[in-house]
Length: 134
Image (cartoon, rainbow, N blue to C red):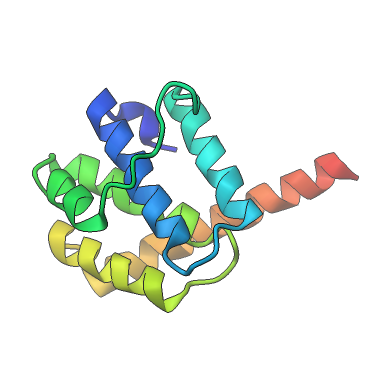
């Protein structure tokens, strides 16, 4: 949705953060893999162009904390998309979101509002995919 607005270093760090979030529950499911591929396509960063290095969440959060507020909001929304890719909001993911909320000064109300919007968009995409696959 918003990843095309990121510069190259922000895109790389976003992939690192998204990868950590996707794997935080101990499972890297097909829907999360698909979401990572969607992210890569949106950012025009094929896997052969950038390999995930395993940069830690703390490092990524520190990096994005120094970015403009608009970039932080893009990151927060996009992370919501991978969190809900498998239809579940795991405790480990909630912990990461709490760290992001604190670092980016996102209120509980805004988190709910944005994640509700992300869920609505995700459901709409699934309906469209279902229609296409009929």
